[in-house]
Length: 243
Ligand code: F6R
Image (tube, rainbow, N blue to C red; front, side, top):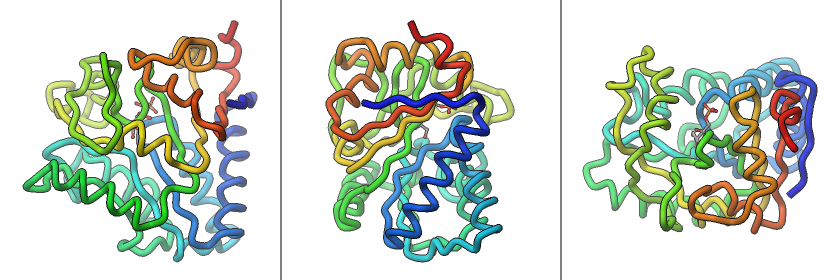
């Protein structure tokens, strides 16, 4: 695992944005794994900005988002799909058919998880997986637990995770769904390359555990230590807290 820090979140987003744009140019059929949440917002804005300035063509790119709330799907306020449409997809020319997303309103959620696994495989796997990290060490919605599920599955969200997501539901934690669908740790670890982004004071402890702690299901992000190509990108608010 390599680790790089940047003075500000904006500088981190600029460096990673440039790297992703270069990858899209070099490999027009790139397969990207994408997170939602506060962390990637600056990156998405940067990618949209560079795309406008430099007329970047995303028409061959495929994307797979990490997770979605159960009972929410395309068009629903609060769904991760709507988050991504508003903040990223509608600003680029990725064909809708190339956008892979879990549908939390699918009638059979187990079948939906299986469909997603097949879709990732059919796309040839994920080339570059971007991740955020929860303060409890979750990635995607793989919450700390006695055991982890390898493949895409349905999960019950931890209460701190629901509280952190209240932001997307007008601050009302009661409206945050109790369950979600998420890529499993195995699905994530099969990506050829992984970049984990962490910014802001709240992430200091989690990143310390990620870099220095043992591999444990009680801290799912620790499994990234087993992957040969993981880069951790931090801003100084996080890096300044590392021992
Ligand atoms: C969301 C996801 C989560 C977030 C994590 C951090 O798609 O995969 O693991 O990356 O909860 O969220 P923020 O960025 O809001 O702190």
